[in-house]
Image (cartoon, rainbow, N blue to C red; front, side):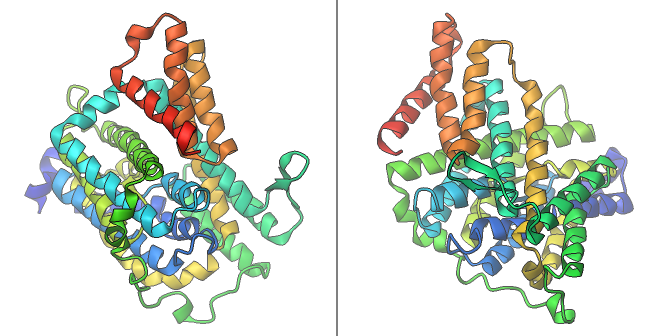
Length: 437
């Protein structure tokens, strides 16, 4: 085992790798409860939260295990934040697409991702899209996620005069969410690993004390049998024939696009922090990207939105993780987590709202990378970012940014800097606005 993971070469050992794996798990364990609530959207989408919980844990375990054994990186995977919100609030609730068909779209994006990775086309497409727009997409998704968190908590509500406004901040559930935000912010400010997860635990305890959350009556309310995958398993294959529409093309492209850059950015960030980069290149990049795309296919088959590499893996690296064994440990912990599904009943939308808001904050750190002093860049970047929360659609934000980018660049006399692929995307998104909105 030591030889397989190259412990001596990487200067690590079992104890360090186990600690790193545990640290990574705690840093991203919140997804076990946030993802089912997001995809179910309080029952509005029709997806069963129990089945999604199981799919989430299994997709994370399988994807992380593939990454650890194949690519041998200390990188963990799970259903991605942002894409799960896009799945529920834009695709299913906004466009009225059944969740089964949406899962088929996730499956299609994963299969395309595998093909693009194996053929090397993926690198060409990534290089064609300006770095500024990539950063804008990440920040826009952050604002979108945070907005959903503010809504779920009751901090922001609908307002007939101004569209949105402050909710009743004296309401019990809203106060609980505000408390959770403060706790989570404090924990993260103190650099406590797994601060988001611990923040949820503290918020649940506070909710029980305040009488807002039903406390467990016994061990059966904490540890129980694994919820059945029956309602979601295989639905992506059953409904695969429903994806051949113009609207689903946009859905698939959005899943694919966001996963593209989320994965690339995460892998580079983790590898850099671990000192695994060689000549500014990522060793075994093909295997790492294949692991990520395979995880999306597995997750879709099980019944969850796009599974992707998690930047929280850097917490494990900070704890000393250097090899794929870190990922193997994290995968094992996700398997153990399957038996804690009864806790789902105590993790309400007010409990998960702080996690959504804080993740939104972290995603908005990419704003500093955008060249705001260049007007031809600032316009498409800003429109991408602001449209996502205002239009309640990640796809629409991407579309607007990609339509304005060629326009501003041409007017500035920089037409030669526009990659042909960007012109193709320009045409696709013009058609999107004309026929699909």
